[in-house]
Amino acid sequence: MLHPFPHKPVAGNPLVRLENVTCGYNGQPVLRDLSLTFMPGDFVGLLGPSGSGKTTLLRVILGAADLYSGQVTVNGVSTLRKRPRVGYVPQLETIDWNFPVTVQEAVLMGCTMNNPLFPWFHRRELTVVMEMLERLGIAHLSKRHIRELSGGEQQRVFLARALVSNPRLLLLDEPTAGVDIKTRDDVMHLLHDLNHQGITIIMTTHEINAVAAHLPWVICLNRRILAEGPPIDVFTSETLSLTYGAEMPVIHYRGLALVAERPHPFTTEGLGRDHLEAHEPPEGKHV
Amino acid sequence: MFEPFEYQFFVKGLIAATMVGGLCGLLGVYIVLRRMAYIGHGLSHAVFGGAVVSYVMSFNFFIGAGIWGFLSAILISLTTRKKTIGADAAIGIITTASFALGIALISRYKTFTRSFDAALFGDVLGVTNGDLIAIAAVTAGTLLVVFLGYKLLLFSTFDPEVARFYGVPTGWVDTMFSLILAGTIVVSMQVLGVTMIAAAIVIPPIVARLLTNSFKHMIFISTGLGAFTGLGGIYLSYWLDVSSGATIVLFAALLFVLALVYSSLRERVLRRSSSRTFKVPSDSSGFYD
Image (cartoon, rainbow over all chains, first blue to last red; front, side):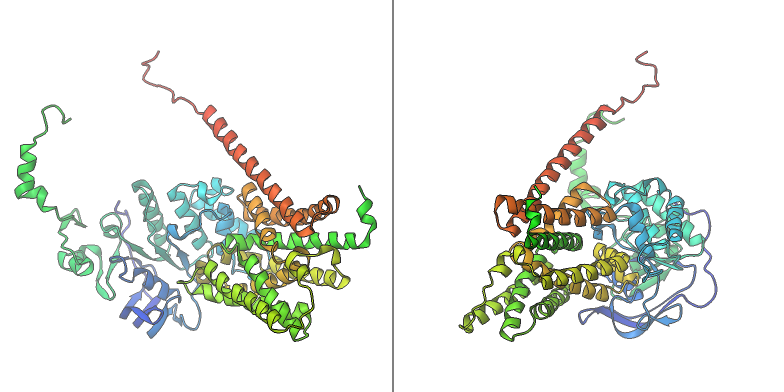
């Protein structure tokens, strides 16, 4: 699924800068002494085990996690002074799917703060929403209830909600969690396209081979930064075992660094092999 | 048929019940969708405590009970923001404590002579001009807040956390909502009674939810239905000679059953018609030719 166009970060001032950030919730730091820079045009994947602080990193950029020390600036402005206006796509499982909203109503929410004092949505905003739905290929579903859609279509609805305010920065929390291969492919192609149109993207993911290996830049995180760079450089057995605390062989294949599962000892040696040989499948069963 | 309209107290009661019904139906949409269905029940009890306190301190009932209800609502929304405490538990703690305070005061001041039957069970036919003005004022204020804050209320009801990320001032939205909610509870007490408010807040939006998938439509249907049950309930209570609050609630419950039957039947019909139009995929291999 390698995207055909190589990624070219734009030179200029950093879009997001974290300096010696320690942050967390309720007085408990999750991330400690973290320094990171995201340039305009970056497309970055955050990798790490559950509880490693991936979502917290997104939230501290949004100004929604408690900042204990250091500073976070988006577009040169501290998040403490002003909440940045960025596109945010939550994990699909956090959505209340029984809530009575149509696709159009859900996407219009992205326009809420354009004119907060004006009671209704502007006709122009409605046009923008319909154009966005058109662009994402779900315009024909605009009057449907959000639950009546497939996983990929649901992901597009909330992507559309994030995009209607024309953000320069898009944050996504596991956009490929719980969707099938085809949908995952569609979503990732869409994100690559958006990135090529100039939107900076930061996303979290659990899928190393299917998603992270195809990104131009990844950051391995486990309460602190363990490595960052192009996947081909970052994905080494050492970094991955540091990140996930498990041994993972890395295979290089046509310019991609892919992570393999360590086979269970039963399947390769000793008891397992004997066991398999003793129970050779009968002839003719294999096609 | 028009006989009851000759009595002024009936007409006043009818107007009051219609407005209160619509008001509860409108706010009920937000309450039910926030999964705080029992806040109506709880707050009305909390306000009862406030009513007793304002009586003991010889304060104006509407102002005293209103402030009391508003503070309770704020406390509930602040407590729920702490993730370890669910909304249902927060409602349970704060409102029963407030109700108990009212009871404690009544038992402490033996000289307490005022009957609280009206507050507990509702007395729509005892509605005074002053009550009507209070109801109209709260209705106007609520309509204004819901109209002006429609977008903000929708987003912060749908997903308060993400709404904050998108810059919606959810703290302000919650405060304004607590304010109109407290006002609604205070003016509804007289008509429906503490014990009946929960139903008036929950039933219309649930019926509306059964009938539509759109938020905008749900708002209109629920408000209309609330007003209609208020109007119809009072009218029926005159003919059946049954307590007004109870009639309104029973009438609403009847509509709920009808809506439930209707939506189940519709689902069944839709399922049947979709299975009837299901086509056997055409066979291009020519095997069956």
